[in-house]
Figure 1 (spheres, one colour):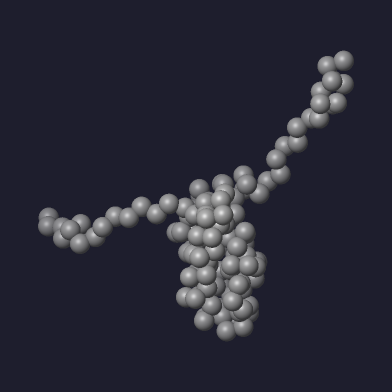
Figure 2 (cartoon, rainbow, N blue to C red; figure 1 turned 30 degrees about the vertical axis):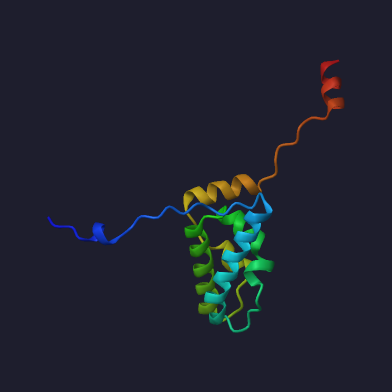
Length: 127
């Protein structure tokens, strides 16, 4: 069997956007701004900043900066809003199912961390 696709296609590894530094947050904002330029024309009532200001933190939390998950979240959320004839809301984004990795990490990151006993509580327990 002859395969010609491999000779024409190059594999690229995309690393997730990290937001633990100023440069990382700037790159994430740049990515979201580029998404706005492509997607917002489909939502005539949407204002610039919908992704970069209003939903930036939530989008990262849901996707952990992975481009594939972010693209799916934005496109599927936008599709639901357009189909319903309403502005894009957080509810549309909440309903998008992402990769299992993204979902597991979202639940881990968004769940409250177990509280640690204070030093006073520890000393009371010991005594």
